[in-house]
Every structure is written in C-alpha cells, then in structure tokens.
Length: 225
Image (tube, rainbow, N blue to C red):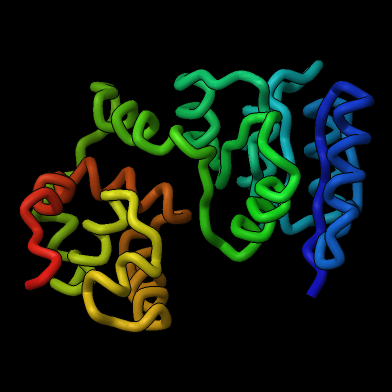
C-alpha cells in the first residue's frame, strides 16, 4: 500500500527537494504541498495524507499551530522537520500532536524511514533528542503529574514491564529479547497500553511512564528475572 505525504515548507528549493526525495521511494508518494501553515491545513484536510512533513517557521500560521489543527481535524500524522535543534521546539511540537521530529540535515534514507515509521502508527525522534525531550517533560512544573498508582491500576504487570522498557528508550526487538517474548507479543502489549492509557503514540507512552515514576522502577528492573 502506498503511503501518501504532504510536504509543507516555505522555501521553494527545500520544498522541491523534499518532494523529490519522497517520490524516489516506490512505496511513498507526495499528494500535495504547501508554502504556509494555512495552506498546509487546507491541503491536509483535502487530501487526508498518511503523513505531513511540516516546517516549523512558516508565514501566516506557523508549523506548530498547523500541526495542532491537522492532528485535531484529520487522521494524518505529522513529522516536524526543522533546522532548529531546540528543546522548546521539540516540546511544543509533541505537545501539539506531532509524531516525529527530525532535523533537516537528516539523511534521505532516514527521512524516508521516518515517514514509514510514523505512517505505521509509531513515533520517531531524531537521534539524541529523545532523552532531552523526556527530561523536559518530566521537569516542567506546569505539567500535571499522573499519580503512579493511577497508572499502575490501569495496566497488567507485564504491560508495566513493557511500558518501563519503552520509557528507558528500548526498541520493540530489545524489549522482546529482554522479556523473552516475541516481537508480535510486544506489539500487542504496546497496543493495549495505547488503548488503556489513551495515549496517542509511543512518545506519549514515554511521557506518561516518566510522569508516573516508572523510570525509577526501570532502573531496578532485572532483565534476567
């Protein structure tokens, strides 16, 4: 099945380059483009793409507000693509519903893989960004802290183990190997966690786990147990 993409960037050369890169992949196709946040919202609502590649700084409505509106009114997922490696942008992008955050110097192969990952329902952050994002969410005093007992009451012991490993930054394969379960079973547990915790994606699970203090449990978890 072909993954549909909308590219939103106010710079013509960058926008054209992104379109060209995406269209080199046989399983991806660009169905629209935009030069402003307003255009991005309009095109996304008209085309309902699987993924929107969204620049942050654009005329009229910026990429963050466009992301918020697109996520709220369409089934499309958004990857923020920017030259600015700033924590505040990452925090704001995830707060507004983005499922991915990549820098514009990301190699084309990684960009294409990011589109596939996000289209499949997962979330993806540029290497090196994840830990800072987690710390930023945990440290923000204005965020509502979810009591640990409330979170643990909603999930099984095995789901708690899986969630703890997600919070520690481990991949599905690493979780499966550590817990001696199959990759399919790992995915099933993650699906249950998303439903039970009303989480948007994997990044949201990480945030919830850290707010609930599961990372503390994780540091004491014996992988061989």
